[in-house]
Amino acid sequence: MVRLADLSASDRDNMLKKIPTLPKFAGAPWVRGAPLQKRRVSIVTTAGLHTRGDRPFGAGAMDYRVIPGGAQANDLVMSHMSVNFDRVGFQQDWNVAFPLDRLRELEREGVIGGVADYHYSFMGAVSPVTNYEAKAGELAQQLKADKVDAVLLSPV
Image 1 (cartoon, helix red, strand yellow):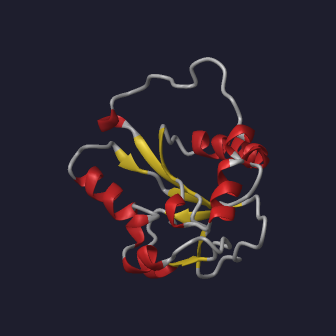
Image 2 (image 1 turned 90 degrees about the vertical axis):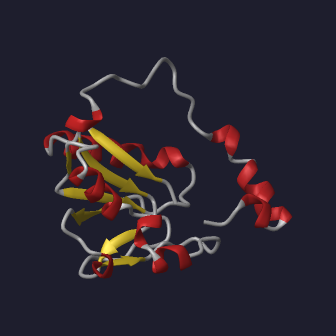
């Protein structure tokens, strides 16, 4: 991911002017639940990832792709559309954007209760961020149905 300091002045200003448009959350959205050792964890990323057989993300895509829990690094393709996105880290180690190997390690070590059967990827760089709300609600219902009670967010 590009650093703000590495962007041109116009790109940096464009990114910074979006901050006031981000949604405001009232109250306390956090809830308490079971200890981490008992939680089933799924990854949700905005890296624009999908399996090789799935359709790529197009410009302005608001939907998400389902990634099976048994996926391996060579099963995934990144079709993220942002010109400011550097894919080198992902190409060298997929865990940079999609830390499934790390989750599997945490499960083996007993740090988490389990890894979910499915994970999910959106394409980031969509504005305004509130456009994701409908699909995020749909995804929340899927996660609940899959008995996922913790999500590792990987914003890319």
